[in-house]
Length: 180
Image (cartoon, rainbow, N blue to C red; front, side, top):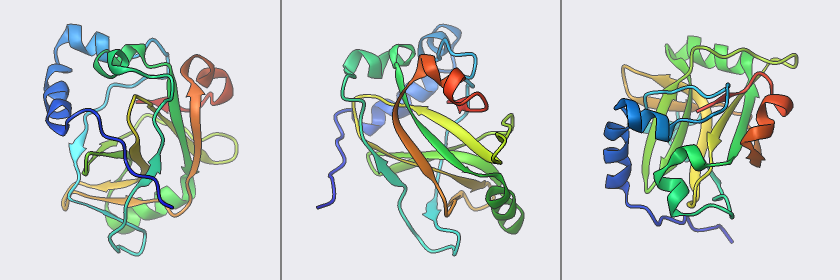
């Protein structure tokens, strides 16, 4: 039986939070103490597609069971992340074929956003690793390429997902990972 997306925080609050996050104090509160953290700009996605360019959905990941509303408001308090991994050669091929850039995406309350990531290195197995902080709600996640011309996010065909990774251990366990 498929799980239902849990959605306790209204979508309009995410739009407002994105605007507020551009202020210095708010950027501090929404950031992370991790050296692997990168502030990114989240852009609305027109459509999520698979590598065959057919419409699809992102993978549903579960909420941090220890999270609360305070962590949703002050994102710096979030202490777990979902780690997504995909292979660099696949991403390079997708990016070249579709004239896109490597990106991470999430879907929450039926709205998908993507952020391009340019300062990432592959590990010795040629994998890109990206961590998205987990809050009190389920959300969809994916790695792939964002095509700015169309607003489409094209998912990678291979995705490894590690749930509830402690942020304080990411640097040791996934040294090449970027946390967003």
